[in-house]
Length: 141
Image (tube, rainbow, N blue to C red):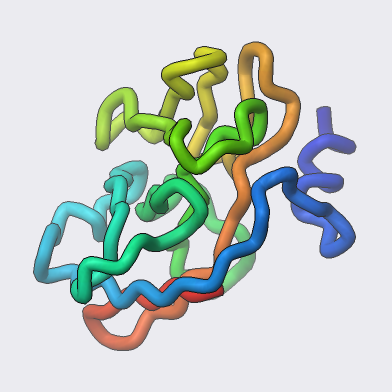
């Protein structure tokens, strides 16, 4: 299991989800609960109404620190790697639970554990870096 975690974080790791360009500036004022560890939200469009990610984004704060001084915010593409289609977007099981599920293949992803899959899926969720500037979280690709 440790090898899977290392492979998923390896810079050589290639997701089956296509790379798309987008820009999201998410104000914590929209949903202050997002600062709570383990809480995630699904975002499909930016403030200009333009789609973000391949199939939307899942944004939140991890229960775990990745590295010392890390801000703990995580962003995943909401596209299920098993389906790899824009029209198939994972859904949060419960915003405070840190789990999401694909409505097609029913793979459950652990959002607090790098998008670790349980079920049919074997590939982790595609992850994007989050930059924190005051009360704004910026995610872009």
